[in-house]
Length: 279
Image (cartoon, rainbow, N blue to C red):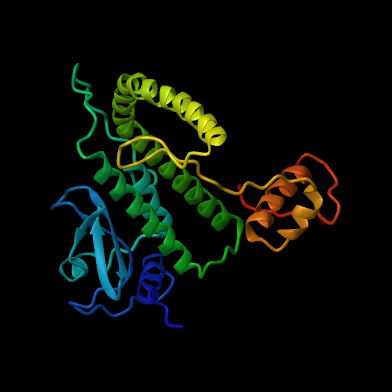
């Protein structure tokens, strides 16, 4: 299998004095991580080039750009993945001092506009980085350093999912409150005729049973006695055995068995196994 990141790996090694620089061809960008000046004498910005849906795409500081247009500016400026990741996560390159924060203005703490799009962009960027890492490392961890990197990414994914879910709940809450308010206003009005209708139904049902009449009422929908079959379980074991091959029953039994063994109970016909998952 060809290594899409071969150029970047060789260029990164060459930048560290560990080999020769690979040839650069204008208009032929290569996947990898690089850096680029924001402007002449300006700060270094993180650059990523990767393949998506069969085409090369690129970002500079998280913003989409044409990889061909920036290629000759970044081809000789590869950076390690860890450096790129730190710059994207913290806004600083390794060893770079944090920029002074502006003094907050009173009354200017409004939430960002379009939180859905902001959250989507953050998640898509992190997903791309994690998928890129897995591709670079061929879905395997080879040492503690790589395990630590991947664990940090896992935690970031979890935090983003939690943050997005919290934002979803925040956005939905006013609608839930409005729905509850509407329900609260209408529920007493709806329940009054429903409750009385149930009482009337029972009175009519008693009369229909004793009178032998086929129905009552002059409206299009007459009130009649309806017959339905209802199961009265007299032997639970026999009834359960009848449904023993039902997927619905097996799902219920599996859930009960899982809860039982986790609480230390012994369940006949159940073998307890230990599963290890990363938490």
